[in-house]
Amino acid sequence: MEHKIEQGTIIYGMKSQKYPSCPCYGIIITARCDIAQNKVPKYYYLIAVDAHTWFCSKHGYTAVYGKTIEERRKAIYSKAEELELDGDTLLSLSNEDLALVIEDKKQQFAGNKRERKKVVDLNTLIEQYSKIAQAETDDNHRKKAIKENTKVAFSYLRDIDSGKMHHYYFLPQAAYLDNDIKSKGLIVDLLEIKSLTLEDAKKIASPLSEISYERLPPLPTEEEISQTERIDDVIKRLRERSRLENTFWLENESDFVGIEGTIKSPWCEHLMQRFSNVFIRIGLDNPSENDFRTLIDDCCQED
Image (cartoon, rainbow, N blue to C red; front, side, top):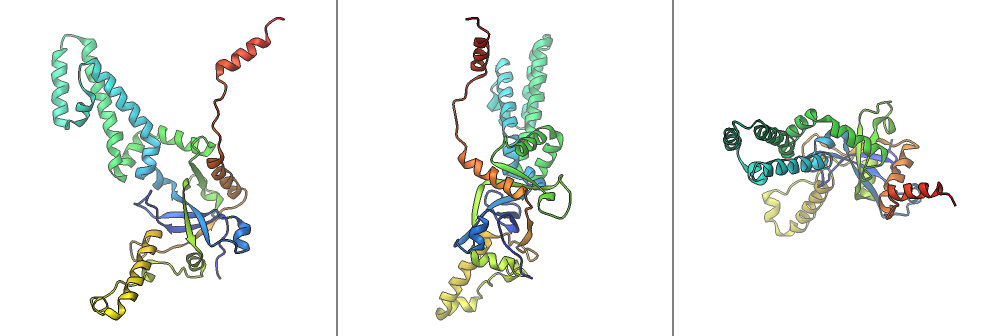
């Protein structure tokens, strides 16, 4: 039985340069009527990533912890300046050299508890900063950093869900799978919009997905390359293979592209509303709290 592709259909096995280390999902956003009436030459979709994977990805981690990293860096600069040290230099030192600088400063303020405490505080700030900043290097470091500071991630996820972080959307599994799980799901990137050809969509919707690693156009043999009359066919196959590898996650023999599910109502409509709001928001020079206080105070003025 052929699967139906419609607005809200979730396709597993997509590729995104924004999230290069993991297979992504594509959520179809093309209008239902346009799909039903075959009015479009291609389908548009949003990139989504498994929520656990997203937080540990380089992009996700930077989005969530970037502000915290910058705040801690500024705190180091401020504390270092108080001790007549340069923050950039301290952060560039190896652990061994940093330990020598810290110990030297402790000795310098041996008889001054207040200044010595500043040195200890500076060292603590650098240690905390290093744990969270160095985590940008790989997924395992990021997992450890998140585990030690879950409060920031929790707050960010809450802001995504409320719409405060309007570039992302949390879609729980209960919205697209036959379960009631809301502690797992996808982070939808509302700024990562891509398109899918109708031909590819038809292949994905087939009973046995026709897009997989095993079905990639084969690489040409040396014999084929040496045959001038076959060079056009070789180039055509290589181009198609490259296109598929750039669009879909086809890295290993077990990789395939398939339909994960379809977003239920009203989740689908809510996602589309959030998506639309990203592009139609209007910035205003809103009244300040002082303006509001003045208005209320004026209400109390006697004539």
